[in-house]
Length: 340
Image 1 (tube, rainbow, N blue to C red):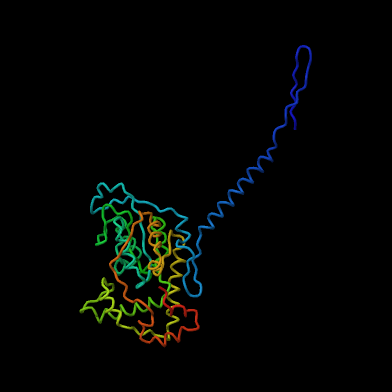
Image 2 (image 1 turned 180 degrees about the vertical axis):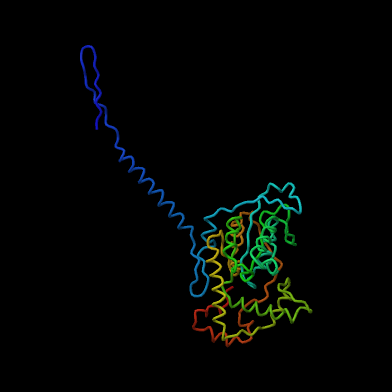
C-alpha cells in the first residue's frame, strides 16, 4: 500500500504520496530462480565427474580412470612424528597415506616398484602376509599406525622426506573379513585406496598356477622368484605351462570377480580409484593419473621388472583346447583373446 505523508506549511497544506516499495514477493522470486540455476549448474558438473564402476558381462568396467570418490574427497595431509628418527627439515612437509588393494598375481608387485621409483613415495610391500599382523583387528590397527607414523623400515622407505606412504594389501589377508573397522580407519585417518585389478582373470590364473609351481620346482638355478629382471629369466619361467581345471574354471572366474565386486562395495565410502593392470601397460596416462590422485609431483616412473607371460594365452596353457572349448560361447569367451 502507498504511504501518505502530510506536510503543513504556514499558508497551505499539501499531501505528498510516496512511491510504493518493490514487492518483497518479486525479490524472493528472483533469489529463488537464481538459486535454482546455480543448483542445476552444480549438479551438472558433479554428474560429469561421476564414473560408473560396475560389473558388466563378467568384467569389471570403468568408464573413466577415476572413481567418483577420488574426485569428491580432497586428500588429507599429515605431519607424522616418528618415534624412531627425526624428520629434521622435512618435518614440515606433508605426508599422504595410501593402500594398494589387490589380489595375488595382479601386477601389484610391478606397480609398487613403479611407485617406489618416485623419490617421494614409499610403498612397503605386502605387510599383512605375516599372519600375526592380521590375527585380529587390534593387531591390524597397530600395524597400520606404525607404518603411517613412518616407523616401518623396508628397502622402499624414504624416511624423512616421504610425501606419500603406503603398502599393498591382498583381499584375502584379513581385508574383507574386517572391512567395517578398516573402512572406518581409512576414513578417520584419511587413507586413500588404490584398487588394482586385472581385466582378464584368466591371465591372472595362469600366473598364479605358474608361480605356485615354481615355489617347489625353483626353475631359476634352484631359486624361486616371483618377479624377474631379465628377459632370459622370464623366458625360463614361462616355459612351464600349467594345466587349468576346466571343470571348475567358470566357477573360479566368477569367484575372482565376486571378490573384487565385494571389495568395491565394502570400500565404496572411502576415497579411492580403480586401476587396471592392462591399462598401466597400454595407457601412458594411467600412471600420471595415479600420481595426481596421490597429489604428488608427476614424474616419469620406471621398473626393472620384466613381464613373464607375454603373447597369446594359447602359448601358456597346456590344456588350451579344453579351456578354449569350455569358454567358447560363454560370457568369458573374450578372455581367450590377447588383450594387450
